[in-house]
Image (tube, one colour):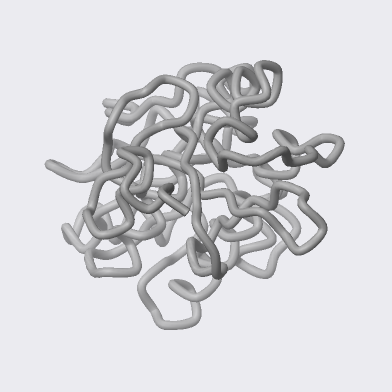
Length: 209
């Protein structure tokens, strides 16, 4: 009954406290969890499910600590059960959301895929975000530079980028400025945190030619 006043529940503010690290940070860098009707922990990637939520930093290590140390029961102040493969499921859901956002951006004309189109947008300073596949050729990627004061996304495979653009594979893509681009960057940062053991360091400053 008294849980609403606990410092863990910061639902009225823009920041949230990580269950695993204790750090307070903007909520777009965390993953929200709620308890389902069956008492099982559910990942709320969109942040819209009803009920009291607890938050964990969107990094694989933090989520693994929360699961291993049974921190969710402590956070919810009740005994809860954990679904098998919760951490991997969080990564899959974030990936799905990121692909959906990129697809929406493409359909609205705010995103392009393919080397020549991306190069053209960069030369015209229409691009705000450069996206390059993890498994693309390093030599090919080095020919394009992240826009000045822009962002770089490097946590998706060519197949995953292809899903967003309706193709088999995409190596290079770009986003124009706007609210949707900001959401894509935030979601990509969460996915990068989940994939620190897959695909290297994430060249957030891009590849300079």
